[in-house]
Length: 124
Image (cartoon, rainbow, N blue to C red):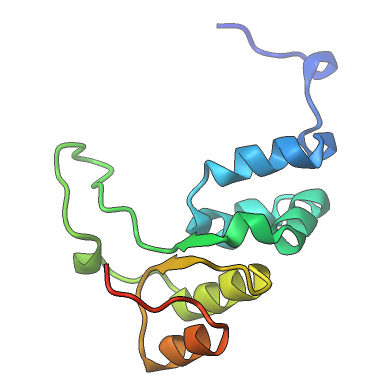
């Protein structure tokens, strides 16, 4: 296996914004909110300033058991991630009014928050 030398290392922070958007759009949004968006200042700026990343918000937990790839359960059977309500609000704020769909746990507070931002409220 080839291990890159320091001369071959890439500076991920210097990637063009559109490339970073593509990379970040492949990650679960809970990961962006809890870690990937904090990696460096260009990434932090991007996840805060590009509402397109937040047009379709999906904050559901991953239903796959990491130790048993065959096991699958309904996402609503899984424990909520720490800070789920703050994540929901942060994602909605970052959408800058452009949120078209929201998937994740909600309670009365989050429903009011969604309704105040004119997010379509349908049961799917």
